[in-house]
Length: 117
Image 1 (tube, one colour):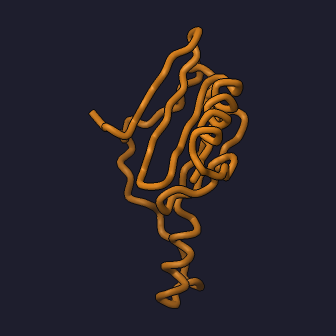
Image 2 (cartoon, rainbow, N blue to C red; image 1 turned 180 degrees about the vertical axis):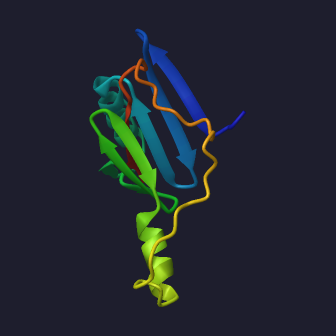
C-alpha cells in the first residue's frame, strides 16, 4: 500500500490524490470534485495550482478528451542532442507483439489529472 496515494468516492465518482515530496497530483471522474479539492487545499495550505498536468517526474502528459498519452519525447530529444545524435535515423522499438496493452473501448470516461505545488 502506498502511503501517499489517497482515494475518495462521492456519489459514485472517484477522486484520486497522489502526494510526492512537495507536489500533489489529483484527478477525478467528476470535475466538481477536482475543483472542490483544489479550493479546500488552497484554503488550508499555501499552494499554487499549475492546472492540467503537462509534466511530472520527467514524463510528459498529453490529455485529450478520450485518452491520456504519457511519453518522454522531450527527454529523448535532450539525450539525442546531448550526444550529438539529432540527425540519426530512428529504429523500431523491440516491444513484444503480445505485450498485453490494449485500449478499453467500454471503459468509463478518463479522469482529468491536475497538479499543484
